[in-house]
Length: 604
Figure 1 (spheres, one colour):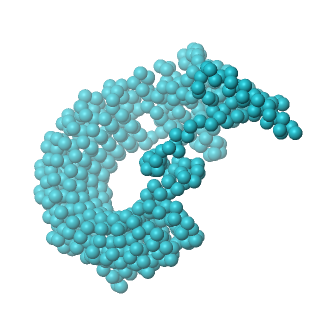
Figure 2 (cartoon, helix red, strand yellow; figure 1 turned 90 degrees about the vertical axis):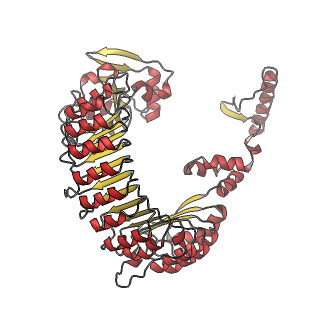
Figure 3 (tube, one colour; figure 1 turned 135 degrees about the horizontal axis):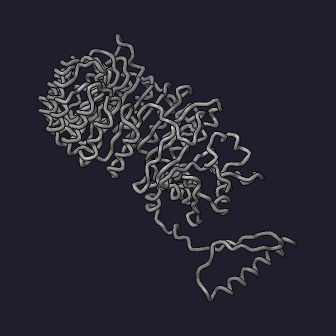
């Protein structure tokens, strides 16, 4: 009875509302609140569903512009969206554990258009086996990209079944797997369109004595990129590299064995490579001389190859005159220096990016690089004992096209970096790290001098604490935001350890700069706020509405005691905020903040 009476009241009330507003407007509010017998009832009024009129192709385009989490939410709206979202998903990443096999039929019945698949398993868990990989490949015959990680139960048989089903594969990336050369050769023989191959820690080819050569296969004609990482016997891929006539990029990372002889054979057969990475590899000047046969080489990375000297770099520079990017990590062995860099400056005028780590250039080579390489846009000098103020001044005076400059662990000072205030007119970013002679005051001065320049300074030493923090120090995990041009730079606060728990300190951070009011109170932009002078510092006194909003946002509205807002303020309009899990802190928790200056604690 009560329910039917309530329904009758709602219906009559709805009719009266519709009749009273019919002449005023054709718009109908989506939700109308009503009170019946001291309870709130809602009446939902139907509106035209324009989304239902959208074609499936339009919805698919919309879904493709969303991230994975939003796509999952959209698939729960209705059955139509579930179907369209599944049919329009081309990229899929799965946790490849052993319990995936029963789900394969239903999973790939929904996602039947997948072309890019990632199968990743935890190293401590049991991965999918050959049966699961074969079942997946039989339902994804249009697969073009596969990334497989830590699937230890996949053997050569599983890779052979996969290769026979997915012959349109263009990119394969495998790591920490147990299949060997036979499984890899099956992919190379069946996937004639393969363009990129990345292999890392392939345990099935670790036995040097019984190593079976890999390649070349049908894929050698189409391969453009080969990347080998951490292989005990990576040289068994030699036939594949030699047979890849169209190879453009070769990356070798931490692969054992002497590579000089193999590089000599490779460079004699494959001369069109434009990018070569050699990292922690046993290669000497003879290997670099072989690489110099690649006359179209544009990118070269020599990372921690201590047997390479100036002679090898000179041979590269003299013949590879199209070089655009050069990275050299010399391990501070002093085997690559002014002679090699002088040759680069002389023969490689198109150089755009130069990274020197553990290399000790002097003013001689730096001046030639700055003068001859007029297209140099990115320069990084790290761990050099000879790069000082004179070298930086030379760079500032002559590197006209330079846009990004990184200096790390070099004996430079404020005096040398002052040249950047007027030099390098196209410079947009400067990063200085672990240079003890460079001070924060200079960084602030440089920001004021060139407002468009982003200056990132990390001196590597603890700075003096601010007056508002005592010797004990409470601030941990400091986050700095640079001030906008209309604000004064915010002094930095160093972190120091105390006896307090790390869980408390990890929740206590510092947010500063960049228009404190705009970034912190954006959600309550319509609420007015006041400024008042306390001593020589500015502080914000929030209105009651703001305190209520903060309390609801951070869940402290249940406390009966009055709440205290902690502000740390400096002159010039720059503000910082102590974020202790909540922005509005209950008064009974003030014992944790006893080290804060009394002038900074305000009772709203």
